[in-house]
Image (cartoon, rainbow over all chains, first blue to last red; front, side):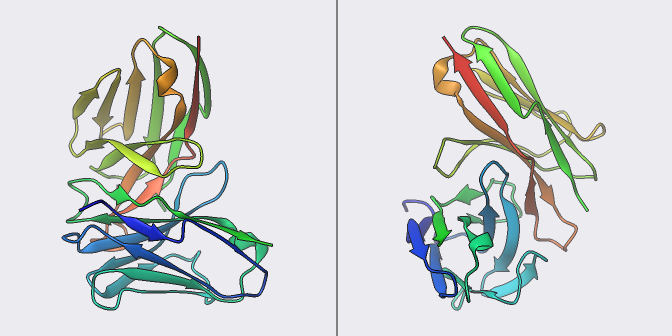
Length: 114
Length: 114
């Protein structure tokens, strides 16, 4: 297992377009998290899945954002009608339990909205 | 709402010197994590601290946790240039149930000068 994979690594999109990111967690990790990081800031929590169930969403996750983890394996994060304020690094993390073994982060998807 | 404060936010050190980064958090938690981030890269796990009094060391870095004081420290011994990076502390937040999402500090940008 090579860790948490995210695709694409970079995405440039025009304002108003929809984008979708993918995260493949470590296979035996049942918990998956999405975070957003803007320049000079720490990552901020967006949403959390335990297996296929989305159990928590941050207030940061407006109705333009949707996330899925259909079979409890990979996850997708979609942003509709992108805005310039959506430009950020989107990070995915996974863990096998309640964080006792730490969280493994993917390399992230850097989104630029022009 | 859990708040995590790191200080200093910027740290310029000379090689060979020692220094400590502090991480304070506002509500009870027994899970504290330290990460390193290089420019444009994702987060690399450094330490997982899960109990009061926990101390872990790896090379020139040592981390400790005092859950009663809600304080963690990251101590750097005899700094070398390769330690230049941004260091984040993150607290496991269970306020939304049993999800233990991470709440991050703003990060400490460490520059080690020859």
